[in-house]
Image (tube, rainbow, N blue to C red; front, side, top):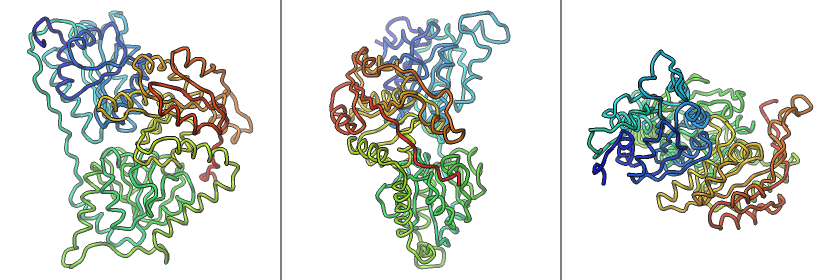
Length: 559
């Protein structure tokens, strides 16, 4: 029983996390972190042991994205902590709530003197400062519960993100007099829009004749999907979703421009809007069609992160949670203006056309442009993958040509779409899918997920086949093997006429997966649908390898 025998600082960590609702922890044991793992043996937390700390970070990230809960990561000091940073950069860029507990050298080694302790860094949490919302060093066991509770609050408050807590080895190991943690409460800080900004935005929208909406990842993080749809229908405003916002608006809705954000035909529609509402997006590189976007109307930008407001375009910046802001706009627009008997806005008029016509025409232009290129194999491949994946299944995509296609063409339907486009690092897909599947199983939901990687990105996380096998995680991993870094090969060929250092020696992925005890098969590109349908219906982890060279559609931002 808790408290019946000797307890240490690690017990306080585990007890606090359990009280806050944590169920699963990802990570790798380490010498300075042994107090954490000793304490887990007396608690109820489930532990998923990855093979590389960066993949542990991706797994905790995937757990959070799939479940909507906080991902928890345990790290050891020095090299272990540093190895996680690229994964944390993705979580930080994408606004994924995570609590990271890192061990630290004993207290006596902290400070200005360099004692030469194993794993010693001059300032470990400074290394994490660029990829986490906040950082804490706990120096006394009695401070552990409150510090972790505060960190959890930081993580779930918008803008959400990973937070860093580090605890010295002796604080984790030494016996404590602190009684067992009985409760811990973390409530997200409120982040509503300012009243005067809502009023001004409503005035702009009431007078708009060509309103349009860009829905970014903050729309999903703010659970603003229902408000977005009602607002769009109230305004009859075309809506386009960024890769991060994919799924925030129904794909087949008459007002949906879907996610063809990198297509010049879509850019032209958005440029023509007289009021453009940008929700949960910085109008960054991809969303602005590589900074070629030149809006002619006024911009209302809503984001929980103040650093991104007006960072690329001037406008009416509203710092707020997307869900709260869109709900406020929707409510205000639906109400009658002061002194009138009816609400609503000016009738939309896109130069004599209805917005639904403009949407249908733009999508038709995109379709014609794609069909004019030699892309039959790519279009069929993406359609086959979409047909094989059940509507409600969540998918996790690495930075690979298949994912770049999916950013634009994938209809996520009832399943969530997750990719690494926040920071753009390789190796996200498979470990994040492992975390997502573990999280869904923990919640008692259908846990099978799909991960998609290229052969280059697959090698970043290939060791996690052991993790998937050990924990019998229901992940199907689709590896599209084109013999190298395919997108870099294409970029270099287009820019310089030849590619350098893009070709890769790689393993026999089927034989390698089977050596881990994971079923695998190699299929031609025409057989991907059948292979995925069978693999997605199987038990435990499995791998499907397709050896083919996929091309990207021609970029439109180069003129």
